[in-house]
Amino acid sequence: MFRHSLPDWPLQTELPEPHSPDCTAFGGSLVQCELSQGRWKTIVARISHAPRHYRERNRLMPRLATRLTFAVVLGGLILSLRSAEAAGEPQIPMLPGTVVHPTIPAPQPPANHHVRFHNLIPTGEKDKNGNGAKVDMPPVVEETGPFLSLGECVAVALDRQPSLKAVKASMAATEAGYSALLKFGTPATLLSPDLDIRKQQAQRGLAASAAELQKARNEIVQDVTRLYYSAVYAKQAEAVASDLGGQLEELTKLAWEILKNEPDPKKLEGLTRGKILLMEIGIREVREKQAQARIGRQQALAALRQVMAVDEQSFPFRVKDTELPLMAQKVPFTKELVVEQALCRRPELALASAGVDAFRLEVYAQGKIPFKRKVPTFGSGADIHSKEIPQAIRTSKEYRPGGVNLELPPQLVGSKFDRVCRAMAFSQRADAVYESARSLVVLEAENGYLEFEFATEKLKYAKEKLDLALDIQKSARENQQNIKDKSVIVQAEVIATKSQADYLEAVLQHLVALSALERITAGGIQPAFPGR
Image (cartoon, rainbow, N blue to C red; front, side, top):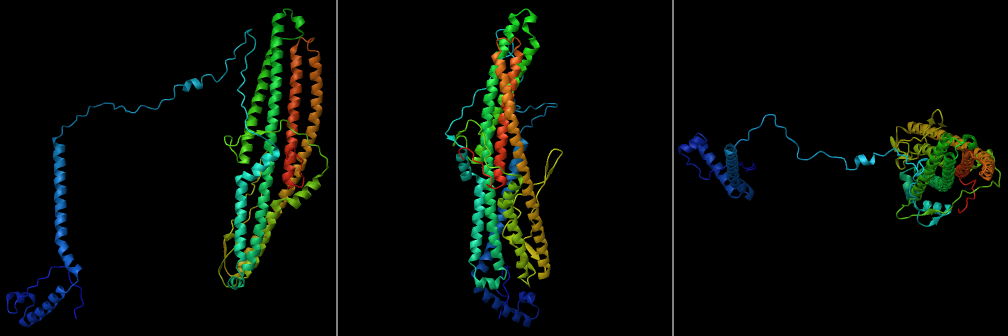
């Protein structure tokens, strides 16, 4: 039977006669020609019954050759026409040394470019008497929106802060993973001998997630408290500087009039033009402090809005308190009490202890699987490197030790003995991480207590200094009509105002230290801030 595929060349259907010369050309002898003629009959018969695609392919070959020939002829014709057109066009002579300018002009600065930076230094315009320079006050930025207390700001921040939402989402994912592990029963334990230990590690993961949530909450409460009272402090400082600036301007104006109208230098009692110019410098310094307080309040409010996750356009609000509160310490506490509360309540230690338990359980989990050479760890299902570790800072003015981060590969390779030994080494590193975290908590507690003690003493001395300065100010104002040298009165006003500013700063530092103690002890020491 004929089993070979047919060739693609064209086959002739008319066979030569056995005794013709053509037959000799095909095979040679007459017998061979007869045999060849029989084979050709078989081939012709198979061609007549061959599939259609064989015959269609033989017909397409001439068509393809015709199309290729037509494409080549058409392409040559197009090229010849283009060359003829190019030969008929006149050539444009190139001028030697011709400079071609761009059609697009170079970018120019705006018309007011030089105007904006022309008057950086004020000209110092004189008043109508030619004495002193006029100080222009910037426009007052009006605050709009409802008044919010400290407690309301804290509630908004705890509800809208994205970082807290992210921690809650991570905690929900951990709970979902733990619930998925609980669905595996006894048959799954037979297939995975370490399943029970993985469930215990998942429980430690739940504890770590809860500690992370509490840590984020404590930090948000401290941030809102600090920024809230910073805005209140800036408002008070701006008011104090504004009052002092107005008084200094009135006294300076009066001093210029006395100097101009009194020709006898002996009756001036030491008042000179140089002293009045020093008073003018004092006015500028006070205005600078006023601007600093105004900008500081805007910065504090902007940071407070960021913590509260609100926008100034969509959620405008105003701080309700107008004065910093004076917190009285009704319950005395010591450094030992602060350290004890921190060690018992800090979520960072709960987080570190959960890591220690999880790493110790990893040793038992690796021992449950004897024959595998590659066993995944609990690190393959959870990113243990996602926790923020504070870096150490060692400068000439500041020292801050850093923590130690955890380390665990996603899988352990080797025999059972090798994997268990390596897991034990990582477990010992987790123990060191816990010891480092505990020492950092103790250091932060001691430092926080010392800062609070310093803030308390500073507040005490600032109050005493303010009382003395107010007595000096009162005495100077009572004798203002009898004192020709107005620089003495100005000096008394400056001392009183500076003492008042120092007192406000001491009150703010005391409040910030209290809020820090609240975070350090994780609520063990909870100040009764107004409105919270």
